[in-house]
Image (cartoon, rainbow, N blue to C red; front, side):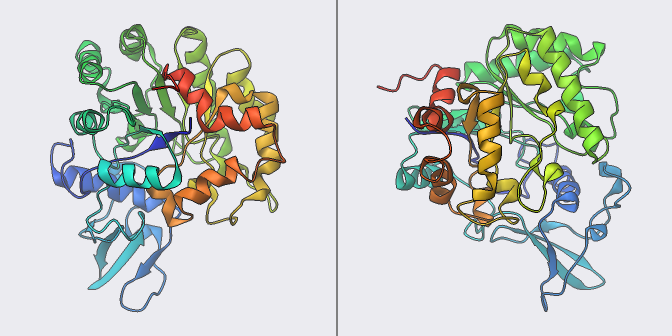
Amino acid sequence: MIIDSHAYCFPPLGNANGFPSAQAHLNYLQREMADHHQPAWRLRDGAAGNKSMLASPEDHTLRGITDVNFRSGGYGRFIWTVDGEEYAKQYLPPYLTDLSHSPDMLIAQMDYVGVERAVLHVHPIFGFLNDYLAECVLRYPNRLLALASFPEWEIEQDPRAAVHAIEQAYNKGLHGLHFIMNSRYRQGMHTSWDSPTCRPFWDGITALGQPIFFTIEPPCPGTTIQDYLQQLGVWHGWLKRYPDASAVLTHGLCWRLFMTEDGLDLPDELFEPFRDSNAILQLLFQISLGNVWDYPYTELHPTIQQLVEKIGSERLMWGSDMPNVERFCNYRQNLEAFRTHCADVIPTQDIDNIIGGTAAKLFAIDANH
């Protein structure tokens, strides 16, 4: 069974999508787009824009955004206006004409490349979408699983209410929690997500017994390797505190921080959280590095071998980041980079674990149903 452990469905971006207002959602999107590595350009002639148009490079919080009428531009892009000129950034593939990705579209894409199940993730970029994702699962119960979310910057305000909201999402058919660590820093918070004031939330969430997916990426609060390793250390402490929880680190190990000319150089400290836990690592390479190397991404083969050796393929699982990844490569290429082009890199059983076996075990999916 082939399972994509990281995909997205979402309604049109630029609406409220679970935020207090459409503008609040756009403000969050603008701050994220300011830091994103996709290039910006002037629509009139293609001249390069720069990150400082959208937000101060020194302030990674929402306070740093500038007033540029940031908005949806259709066709997978966001646009804004500076000195009467329109600029754009292509965050999504151009075929997303209204910046939405429906479950019907995802299922058609899965059918085309032979993916049997997909796990729907969520991020404040797309909104807080528990009800929407529950409807996606209800529409395709044998094809889609989905994760719940809650505003990460609000969990200690009323931990019992936050846990109750997640429990309600589980009761509606969602299958786990997706926790975006750096969304707290976007709000200007510096209290750790694992501080004593957050413990009642985590005690309640782990007691619910569903998998917890963690996204740890800069800013956290800075953008250096040291910032990232410090947050991995916090996560390591969390894993020790809740050894029976099913925990997943999404996207991988912030690959762009560890690029060399010919591949990746992963320091030993990255593997510490996995040595004395059962945590799982998602392998999403192309969404981070698809504009660095080309298909079939042979530069990543030594890293894949290293990860299998150090963590074990039974704790690694492939995810695509569809539809976002199609700004770099198509869905079939994303899958075949593992299924076909790793055939001489790692054993077949390891490939089978990565492209479906690990996720099937995590979610107790019967391959015969």
